[in-house]
Image (cartoon, rainbow, N blue to C red):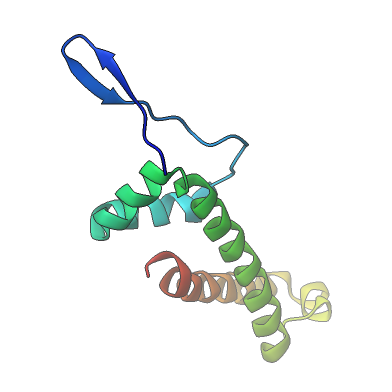
Length: 115
């Protein structure tokens, strides 16, 4: 890694720039960034200075979304939450799906975001 400095008055300031590309960090990327900033400051600073922070947060966000989708489908199949239930009793289907979604998100937060 090569770090360049520019002179500003009497001081040399590191010339930092964001990596090229668009990175969608989303909800889980922002939560992970906050976790790194508060609990793992050395890793946060290292990722930030090397330009790998936003690609890392983008990967975390996408992994969380994929994992939540997978867990939600698996839990719904295991608990018998089907389209037939949705047609028969919509409020029960919504209640169960909200419960499943909350549990899946809690698992993902503990496995991927806060680690």
